[in-house]
Image (tube, rainbow, N blue to C red):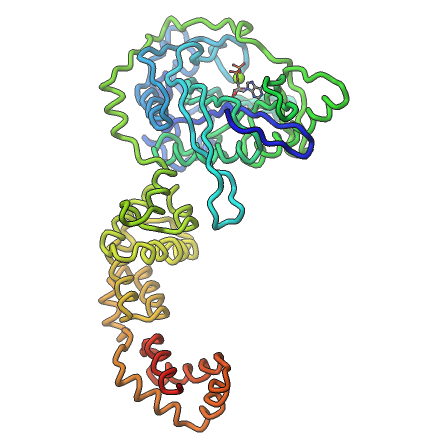
Length: 507
Ligand code: ADP
Ligand code: MG
C-alpha cells in the first residue's frame, strides 16, 4: 500500500481514476464505419471538422438485422496496452450488454466488458512534481485494477427547445482503464494522466488529446482521518475533460467531504458533476449498481481466445517505456547511457520520433551526447517553434548535427559561429562543412597569429587603462581588451586561446 500522507486538516484524500481513451484504429470497434484515426480521414481531424452523421453504418445505427463484428485492431491495441503496463492478459475475454436508454446510443445498450476484461491488474509509474523544474520528482507505482474494451456513444447538442444528435462518435473504440484507489493527492492524479498519455502516445495506442475528447476521466474521491485503514464512502465525478478540471474537481471535492464529515453529515455514495465556471461539484444522481443495468453476455459477439503467440507478436511491437528510456539517457556511458541531465531528458523522452532522431545523431558523434542533445532540444526545437513548424527528421540529417558538435568540440568553430552555422543548416538543409566553406567561417587556433594580434592591441594607447585596472585585480577589465582583439581577428580567434595568451602576457 502507498504511504499515508498527512495533511494540515488531519485527513488524507483517496482517489481512484477511471480513464476512457479512444484507441487509434481506422474503424469503429464493432462496425465497418471508419473513425477519426488514419484511413480516409486526416490524422489531425477533430470531431467538429467532420459533417455530423457521416461516419455511420447500419451497425452504428442499430438498424434491424445489423450484427456487430469485433475489430481485431481495437482488441490488439487493448492487449498492447496491457503488455505495456505489465498487466495479465487472460486467455478468455468477452463482451456484455449494459442496458439503459439514452438518445446518444441507438441500441439502448452499450457493448462493454464486465466480468472478463481484456487486461487485469498491471501498474503505471508516475513522477510527482520535483522541488524545482530541473530536479527529478519522486516516482511511485500506481496499481491498475483492469482495463476493458467498450464502445463510445454519440453526441447530443441542445439548443433552445431542440436537441440534435450526431452518431459519428458512436461505436468508436474506447479503452476504460481503472486504477486501484492508490492515489493520494490531486497532483498524483494529474501525474498518472500525464504518464498514461506518454505511454499511450509513444506506443501509438491513443493520441490522448483531451481537447478532442480522446481522453476523459472519472474521479472517485473519498477522505479518511490520517492513519485510518479502511476506506470511507466515495463519490464519483463524471466526465472531467481537462487536466485542470481533474485537479480542481478533486481538490474541491475532498474539501467538501471534510467539511461534511466535520459537520457530522454522512457522505452518500453518489455520482457528481464538475462545473468549471463555479468551480464546484454538484450531485447528479445516487450511485447506480451493476444489477441496475441488467448486464448479460452479448449473444451476437463471439468470446475471444487470446493465445501466447498473439501476445508475443504484440509485445514485439511495443516501444521502450518513457521512464525507462529517461533512466537510460541519464545513466552513465559505461551502463550504455548518455549521462544527460534530467531537464534535457524530460523534454525529449515523450516524443518517440525525436528520440529516434537523437539516438541516430549521437551515434554519429558518440563522444559528446550532451552537446548533440542540447543542439536538438534547444536550437532545433527552438528554431522549429520560432518558424511555427513541426519536427521533421528530414529537415536536418542527424549526421549533420554530429558534425557540427564535433567542430565546436574541436574548437574549429566558436560558439557564436556554431550558432550561425546551425541557423543556416536549419534554413537551407546544407551540411556544416559546406556552410563553413561558403561563409569562410572557422575558428583560428593559430597561437602565433593570435599572439601577434594581441600584442598589437596591447600596444595601443587605449589599452593602457584596462591593463592597469586588470593588474590592480579587476578581472572584468580583460573584456575591454578582448573585444578589440576579437574584432581585429574578424571574429575568428579562438576565445579560449585569446584568454590564455592575454593572461600570460599580462602576468
Ligand atoms: P464500480 O465498479 O462501482 O464503478 P469500483 O469499486 O470498481 O467501482 O471502483 C471504481 C473506481 O473507484 C476505481 O478506480 C477505484 O479505485 C475507486 N474507488 C473505489 N473505492 C474507493 C474509495 N473508497 N475511495 C476512493 N476511490 C475508490
Ligand atoms: Mg465506475
